[in-house]
Length: 300
Image 1 (spheres, rainbow, N blue to C red):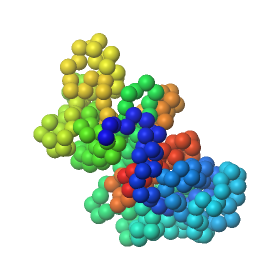
Image 2: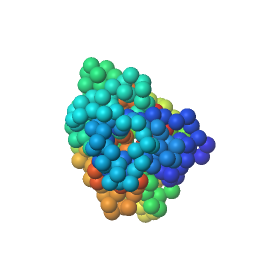
Image 3: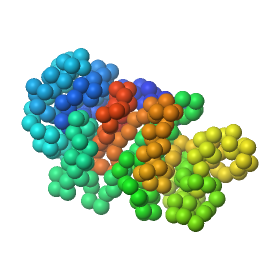
């Protein structure tokens, strides 16, 4: 199968697969329900929305969503709703989790609960985003821009493996992984030196069948004309499939810059968990939430 080039390709593929069931934690807002309703109508998922029944019905009415599209589990309160949704996934009633109106810290706390959460013992939570960037000829995977503030080298190894796995679900057989830093030269700061180590690991096939380059600047990773102008002879010359960022500050800025300045559409989820967990922002578009659901269903 050819590599996917647009987020709509993910939704198209998921429609051909057995339908997954999604639990929505504290789904009491119109924006979330609009995306959930669309995903159900288009055959992406079935859904159980957890929260106060009356508030869910009111939010659905506000968003013009037919409540008959999904099941409602009547639970009062934000934290109890998160716990109940996580329980549905943990027990196998649902295949994936989505954040509704819940605050991110409460949502993450439910996922990370040692006794009742979704993170395997010894696991690492990471965030993977997939961008549909105008003018870029392929989907672009990025990690981690939302969960781990200052990842250690060992954490970057895990982050890279998760990103490669997501790229594989997008039918990228030999992903090109760019370990980002400020320059293509190895300099005397951590991100540069760790990028060089990660690239050497990739050359030794410790990440499987990938092509890697690092340290590498973002212009060399994404723009072939820059690589041509600079005479860069690396393994990646403006054709990266995956960007591994140095830390959350770089990743968060890059994520938002791609959306607001680059006019990209994004899908995102939390990885490292026993099941995909959709983590969207209130500022995300309905399309972004819909495509995040599709990405989660593809990886469920």
